[in-house]
Image 1: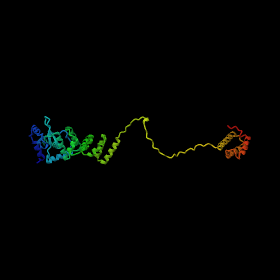
Image 2: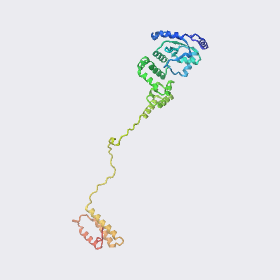
Image 3: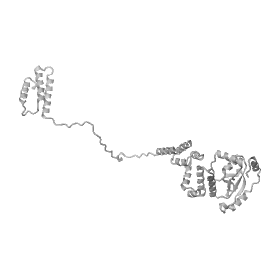
Length: 351
């Protein structure tokens, strides 16, 4: 029957019979070759200050959890005694708590000086195995503390990840993923410890290498971002993290891909090729040139008769066929040019 309240505290405070630890160590060492299930256990009322957490099994306990344990102890007493072992290689005998560190912490905060424990010979491998078994059974171990215990288990005993997986009934990839959590920044690990970031979210965050981005993503998870939105944020972070490498290249070594041939209609006006002038066109140009020069030379002193003859010359130029051979107007042209000479037009100096 558990002792309740102040009566229990009074009985514990009155305890003055501490068993000789040398005798306990001798008993346990004599029993170490037996299988774990066949080894003896010794009940012991230990001074609270003599208890230390087994190296490598340190873990986080929330304030709320310790408070609930304190209420349970005050109401119902200590239902499950902590499991302990000894530091057999130390001349100063230390009692290591393997299972029940939270209960010991609650006892200390309740200001008790003694606590009933069970002491058993345990190898380091057995201590880690037993601690994980109890925590998994109670579902008390958060992913970070489990990863820390896996890491310490490997370092202190040399156990492989595959063997841990076999004993825990898990896959080796699960053990590996758990250990990878320790690569996250301390702030992210703390958010995982207190339950604000789940194991699945933490694995997703590990896809990003930048510690600052990992912390920001974890804070978003703590604020309640959905898993789908978390995936989108991580994808954006990955795209931004792709490095742009500049490789200097000599211009002569650059080979550009051929440009695609694009056929578009040419809308620019095309010039017609210059054709050779006909005899008539050349003759008319010559006559107009003579007329223009005649007007220039006679300007200001041209007579009415000369003006009339120049007009007639323009008319003849418009009627000219450009072919004098067989022209019915050839005689008329000859008479007209003779008339021009008489009136001093053709005879004008034309340069």
